[in-house]
Image (cartoon, rainbow, N blue to C red; front, side, top):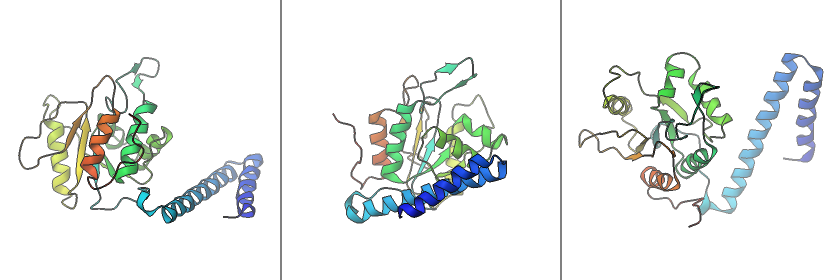
Length: 229
């Protein structure tokens, strides 16, 4: 991409912002975002061309690719409740570890967290939830692929287990998958021996947890971005 092209779309976006009309601002925003994504893709392709053995996991997820069943509270945070926002936040260090899993496995994400009720309760679309994660720097562009069903038995500790199994039954093409949750989920021996990582609810996802998930979701791949020992 030449500097002339770069200057062109950047100037267009700036002019749109100065114009002040909502339509022009949105058009400039979309144009700038599209060019940024294109530039990112070109950089990634050049990295892969020069270093094919260190290929970045940036392909779009497709059926048959690995799937991660993701809990959020106790995984992407340590249940640090903020009374002012009446919610738990998302911890950047946990996000960085999840990103390392995504980068090394190119897995899709199925939300098994209670946060999925934002989608199933129609507060936002699945794509909207993906954008929410992206604003917290989760590298999940076109990777949030679904949610497990709503709870039928709220007091049953095995309910989440059944929800995950049912999703797998409905998607037989998914043969490589893992579950990460702070709850002590019990899957038993049949019909699945489910690869499961339980996090510490007070700290969330650790480096060690991320390493295990990478091994489960992509056992033939050498780890990238492993933290120093």
